[in-house]
Length: 362
Image (cartoon, rainbow, N blue to C red; front, side, top):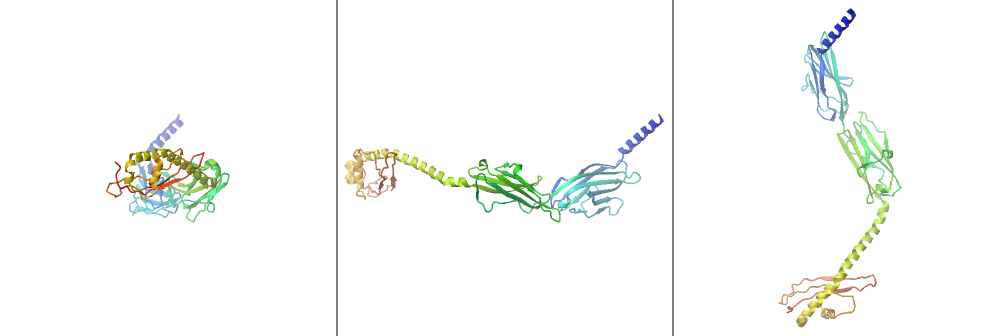
């Protein structure tokens, strides 16, 4: 019974003592930052009856800031790669880092220590990544000496990104769709003296018909760093077979349009001829009062007024107006109407009109 009482006493003592010990309640460390940013670190704690001896900040295993209340001055900074403490702006609960670089990336830890007699200690940490972007976007190489490919050809391309921290992640897509990872080869990058790395990715893909859209394959290499950085490079692959077939398709299309236009013109010929006959009939009494600069125009109009057994018609392409004063206000048109049928190749009838009316038909 006595042993059980001792254990109960010890448990009660430890629980009461633990509840009153120095304790960190929260810290704030940004998960990501850009090289050159100002970073704010906070560490909140409760003394719970203890007296604070010191607060310290560490980056991995290197201490870079301390606050010891009994010292004069209480604040002190220490060298750590990539970290510059703004001593004036920093205090007990908050530390300001100015112009951080990628070397500040890692585990940042706040540590508090109580005075005698407890010497209670508590720590809390969080990770931070400082992004250092590449000096330029990614570049695609491998197709500089070749302008076109065919279905079945092996496409070999490389995409590379310059030094950055962390190294960029490279991915490929075709018209917005990611390519199969089976066609992608990752190459080891280079590392400089400050720990920044390059990235390089290769694409080895056998071209298929579905890769080309209207004879073109658009490939992109996308370079990313977490959610902080995204750039891309693009290259266009031409289908050589599509280039050769395009002129024939264009000629065929043009021939279809010419046929349609010719058919429309042929359908209008009887209408235009009938109108001209009506004009001639209405004005037959005054034809002698109308002079034409073209000696053959009168004969042409007279010929059209006579019914013809020939289905081929020639229609003047001129509209004649007269102001009754001997001056022309008509619009001059020159035209050629050609009608071709499948059974016969009709002649081209060309009437170049240049007429001048000197009186009005009554």
